[in-house]
Length: 435
Ligand SMILES: [Zn+2]
Image 1: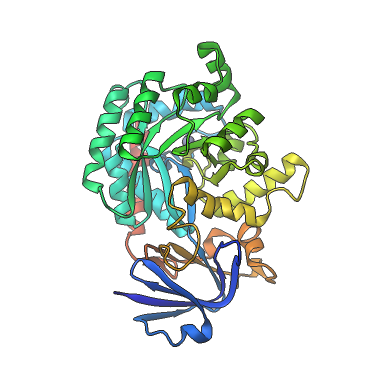
Image 2: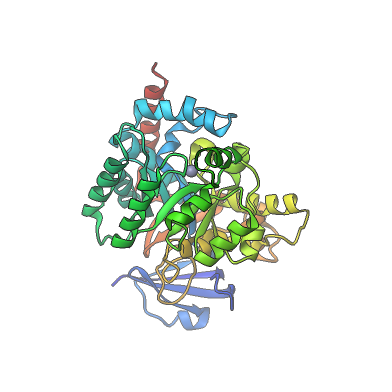
């Protein structure tokens, strides 16, 4: 079995008892972390390769808990609009004309290249043409949660909710047992999915042990619409249907009452916080600190590149921490460590993989990144976790491993060809611009 020893001045483990180790080496054996040892002990371990990183922090790969990778092909296509105008009059028509197996494969690969370059090793995605998303995940080497979107209305992928569900389940068959690919049921949102469909999704999630990924309480409009139509807020409606449970990853969760936060904590449901997208679409300020203080598991996501417009988890961490403080008026809110936890440990917990990823620990999967801290913008260096959240730019990510395999070697991809990805992006730009 292949073994590698990586020596680094800082190992950010994210284990609460000792979050940062100095002058240690991570020993990778196959896809796992075999051990983490001080330099003098690590030197005696026989390995196939050794990597000496003089200025780097080794840390868990970042977990992007909410995205629509293929929408990267619509980056910058329609900006500065309100959510429903943006969706109804711009994004959905453009998707209607262009979305296909090839669009999704090329767009997802583009997103994955950007994410890997920026230190993201896991994506919890939500889109259509699910096999294309899974194939892009296999090619790029990213750990991919393939959210099979379910809607009541037709698009290029399916005609109605039953067809979205049937196609999604069918498309996962060839990927069964692949360690990097996991399919997820993704009813799009309470305003696009009926009670009957939510009930079906819940039954299937239990039958096949799948997660549920859904946009919930993203805007105030969504809530007023639900009160008009169902005489209930969406979360009350979903709770009656049994959907608020530990399988649920609720994207956004911007407008939550104290009772709804308590409900999420009691039921063990997770929230994917998307600070940049919430700001760009003016959806509002998610009560992240209140959620965390009350025991809700909150991870961090970028949302799609059409509403961000970057897939940059370092930018997302910095923004999350700054918004929380600026909004509450309390600078002790959302510390650097709590913020980094959202992008690692909490994301892993939401994905039910906290025994395998999100921390660096003996026996866990080697999903790791190395960040060069010698950059002038990260000097001097008192506290590596402070720099990771507040000062590091994603371009400082030099090495990326998923399941022990190196995907980025000194900022060079080992698997994907960036020129090919660029050419595909230009091809789709021309197609989308054709009237
Ligand atoms: Zn979204």
